[in-house]
Figure 1: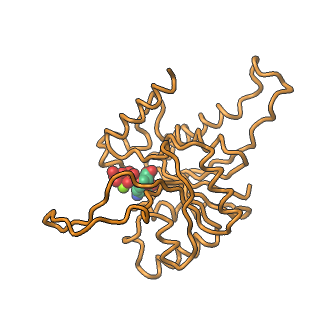
Figure 2 (figure 1 turned 135 degrees about the vertical axis):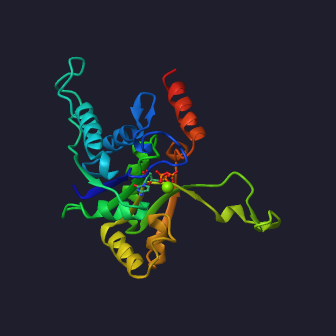
Length: 251
Ligand code: CTP
Ligand code: MG
């Protein structure tokens, strides 16, 4: 494959407040990581998948990945004729241990990239319902522009700039803002350069996503339309929302 997807799943999920790390919290019977991987397995082209999991959960993560792989690469089922659609492209899944911060975890993931990869997507396992089509769109846009590409949605609320006291300092021009999501895609060399730059300049702590690292290094990043289902599960309310969406989808 020439595309890799690094799925960062090594966080604890302190805001979700569950007994197990967030990626292993069940959402309608299946852990968030399993749901996220399921979408990635539906991507159009073969990809290298790198799961960055908590260091003490590597076996669990491997089990989840194996389950998803088995579901997608199952032999021809009785109700699907042998002459039917071609088997999906094969995926390789590598599991690595995460770091203290999200960016450390991305770094660990990057160290597992195989040589043939030239486009890297970084995706949050916590965005468990992200459609595969969004991942395909990010890959296509990175390929056609050679830029970093991130999905984003327009903001619906009016945004105020406020002081510590709560006093309003002004209204932000909403048309200039985008609420960005993952997967964020980059030419491999660009992501590597940005990470090196950030490490050398002590910028890791300040920047919370890969697009910020890449833009901070002076490299081009553009936004494409995101998707409502790519929202991040952060709080118990977000998990509830995801449950309701899945219930509705099942009718
Ligand atoms: N992540 C990671 N390694 C870390 C921290 C975060 O791989 N050291 C991953 C999370 O697993 C998640 C994604 O980055 O998929 C987005 O982070 P966030 O939603 O903040 O998850 P957590 O850090 O786990 O949650 P919280 O901040 O509430 O503790
Ligand atoms: Mg976090």
